[in-house]
Image (cartoon, rainbow, N blue to C red; front, top):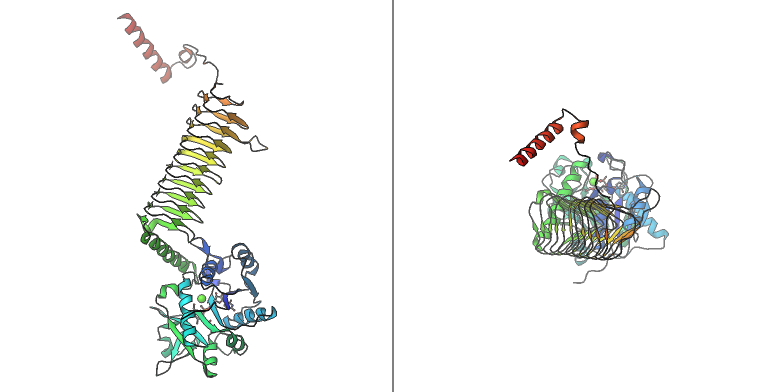
Length: 486
Ligand code: UD1
Ligand code: CA
């Protein structure tokens, strides 16, 4: 059986979502790295529709901007006032007509607040719909608590006759636990007609798309309700409690997929991943790890405990512990942390080491090089096999412009150095402890700037008499005399 590309997917996203109590339109709330609307669009995209139309209304400027950024191929239709789901679909159909698009073939309808929806489920719905030749196929679900949902109504023979909204349902109908998920496959031409015939004769005084079922059936068409395999998928999000539940469920789904593909997740309860994250085989995600955006972890890498990585690449067999990284590229077989911060443009080449209390920004650390302790590396290019002494600062900012520092291959810089950019340390050069490197250091040279040490004997006893330091100094002096006397 061949399944056609849907002629269109229509996603409703015009409602306010009052119960979110938010400045942000409900469908823009984020779960696992995407807006709820983004998840629905990703699932819809898997059916490969000819076009996608999102109906916008409440907070429409924000929604339109979000779509322009994240899904520019999607068209929008405006629903000025929220007169119901049927009215919203009518706005989409009218917008398509205005562009000269007459719907025929299959049209998928989904709501923007169901982030757990999978593309596979929509594809199965389309396949079942087309195989049966129905006017409409509703994805239904049996749920533990049907309150609030539209109920699937069947006659004595079990045939699907329509959907009744909770507010309009009789006691008997409310006892039904098969509900309307809000996802449908329609015959496009029949949909375009039926949305012009919806009444507002109901508890909310709105045009319900759910009334289309009974109308189409009355016209003599076949209508079907196909129960979803997993009701979790169709859960809608109406408030922040449900938002947290949906996030937990989606995160669990993503972690399960990773574990099945060969990733060890030590503590799924404290490990959070976004939908766009990839992790290679035999990688280990330790507790308290969050992988966001387009983060990609190589095979055999160990990440965590305590890692927050955003849009960051980690190479094979790297070890990344207690690290915050954004837009960084961490090479294979590196070690990073504990307690390191890698900011955008940090490139840590294979085998390099970034140690404790080290911050790196817009810099390259060459293969096998080490920045082990207490250091800020900003706007620098460090060659291969370099060792940067503890407690150094790449002084990249003169108060007006940012400048770069370059360190040649196999250089050894002393502790507590300041590299005042722009400056260059040549290949194989050394610098002494406490050097303020203001001028270029030629290859193989030693640069020292801290000057010779001045020692003033007896200063503490003269200037700080009676202090613990002075007493300690006296004791040391006596001990020295005694030793000499012996
Ligand atoms: C709807 C269904 C119900 C189903 C449930 C599944 C109708 C009449 N009822 O009820 O049968 O069980 O979803 O979750 O369809 N929207 C608009 N414009 C409007 C009204 C709503 O775009 O004028 C959008 C909302 O943004 C939302 C979606 O449509 O994304 C659903 O609206 P909502 O008010 O949440 O419908 P429910 O009462 O949940
Ligand atoms: Ca809803």
